[in-house]
Image (cartoon, rainbow, N blue to C red; front, side, top):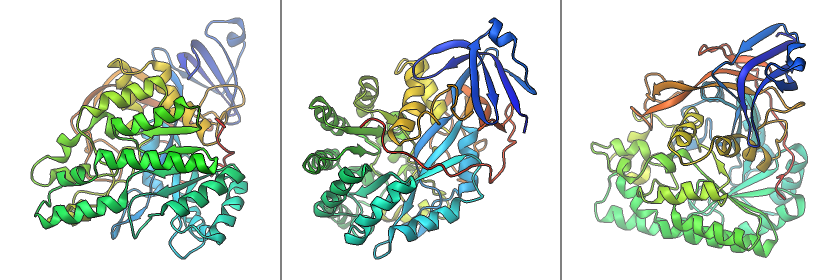
Length: 466
């Protein structure tokens, strides 16, 4: 690897600044920035120079919600850590935080070690882990403390999926009390899974088996109610709360009300809720199965509230919840019974591009794009300023982004290991040109030059907003 790399002539865009600057990289880290054409920049020498004229120079994306190789519903997510991190790099993401899963009756350590083994030596970009708590007991509560010390500083709980991941309010409260003590951040899948199961059973009894009914039974009010309840439990525990994949206006309102009280409550949404809707779930010939995820896609009118939440900072992060299942052989498991369709969408490769399109469409500013996709996720999960910005001392995770290139999103050209695209045929402007991970070229002018095993595990500190 070249000792020194110089990026010249681009517009450097971070969450805080936009400036025409050259960037000097040394030994995998950013050594310095200087205004393009300045005496300081002119004095620099490098083994390799990348010309970014006409392009943005942005921090690599930080996707803090992915599920590579996740077992679910009798099958497993189709992207491995190798294929998934390669696709992430193609999409301008240079760090993922994936979810290690504790199985009921087993130790957290056992689940975490399984995920270490899946990822080790296979990743093209850097990675970290959250821990899914499926079984809260005295042993696992003690293990939470040890994981925080190891750099696994966030724990996901589910109010949904009874019999699989579900935790009742008592277990949730105990985990929140522990996180208040050890500095960890509780992440919540907020849907009332007990009530949803009743509605699923009733829908199927009426013969309502198509994918669109998945969205109809997972009601907006049951997301809002669970969000409200999670906030109340976090208040009782004196703990911070991060609500994942917020999809509905009513849930945003619960977060906004909590934040207006000054509570340490945070929210994430995903591109699928910003760009897709129940119209997709209703596509004929079982095509709607491609769009089955939980929380589900909502009617289009909810999108305005999500965009507004991102502008007002009632929502702080856009992650993908990347959890791909092939249409053939996986999504098809739910033909005749929507409740058997594996829940999840592919998206790790599309997030940065879709959010750039949102800049062009006037939903967010250019700096807000970088804030919600790079800087805030890094801060939220203890990775900043190593990740999420372009500053001296930060890892040289950098994307040269062509804001004028046009592309059509398609399964024929994407790099995710899945046989469809959730955004098939969508025309967007903006495309990743070149990607560096810790100073190493992973994508070089639209050619993959990375390798499995370059990506390293990154231990995290605790949430930097507390």
